[in-house]
Structures are given as C-alpha cells and as structure tokens.
Length: 191
Image 1 (cartoon, helix red, strand yellow):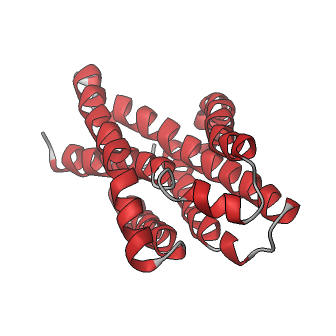
Image 2: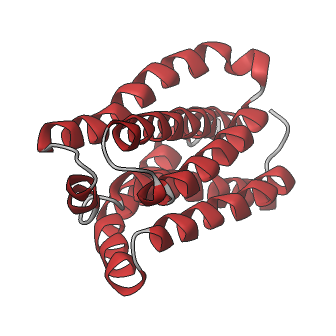
Image 3: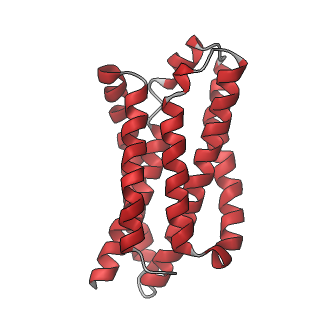
C-alpha cells in the first residue's frame, strides 16, 4: 500500500469507529437522565430511533449530491457538524425538563445523524476511489471498526458517565471529532 492509501485507510476507519461509538455511547445512561427530565420510555426509544431514520434519509440525499459537493468536503463538514452536535448533546442536561428537553434531544440527535451520514457516505466514495482494486477487502476491514465502535461505545460511555457525569463522554467524543477535522483536511486527497 502507498502512503496515501494508508493515511486514507486510517482516516475512513476513524470515521467508521467514531460514528458508531457516538451512536452507541449513550445507551447505558441516557434513559436514566431522560426520565429525570420528563421523557417517557417511548419517547426515549424515539430519540434513539430518530438517529437511524435521519441517517438513512441523509445518506440517500448525500449519495445523490456527493459529486457536486465533493467527497472530501462532505466528510470534513460531516465530522464538524457531528462534533458540534455531540458536544451539544452533552449540554442538554442544562436544559429545563419537559418538552424543551425532549425537542432539543430530537433536534440535536437528528443533526448528528445527518453529519455522520455525510461523513460515512463520503468515506465509502473515497475508499472506492483510493482502493479501486481492493474495494471489497477494504470495506470489509472498515466494518471491523464499525463493530468496534458499537462494542466499545456502551462500556466506555458508562464508565465516563459514572466517573465524571453526563457531560464528559460527549465533550470527549466531540473533542475527538474536532481533532479529526484538521487531520482529514491534511490527509485526504481532493476527491
């Protein structure tokens, strides 16, 4: 593999990993916090589910416009949006309980899903461009990072929540995503 391919692989693997860890991190503790803020179990389930719905819809739209927008710009912009959304989700405990809290949970989670839809959709396009002869192998390898994010998200999130409170898991992940933005600007080819 060339240096460019290695750096691209690191970049898209980190996108897959971070998207899934952000998706799964709130599983152990968000329901408890949301109940304290007046959300029912049904609403909590809908907050979790809205991420998948908006990710699906946004992925379809992003896929249609990726050529016009540019894969690199889409990935970097998606990471930036998701970083901001992740940090904002951590600040939601400061919002008054009830309808305001619930509405903001839906909005922030949906915006986060759109950001990661942009990042993940463009990461697949970049992978296909940089690894034209090994697309299946590379995409299969990237799925390991997706699985790793899903596996590590709940225990890492639970530990940070128990140790430092509600905000810290989101601040750390949001900060990590923000650090990935300049890395991806420098590393990824203009596609």
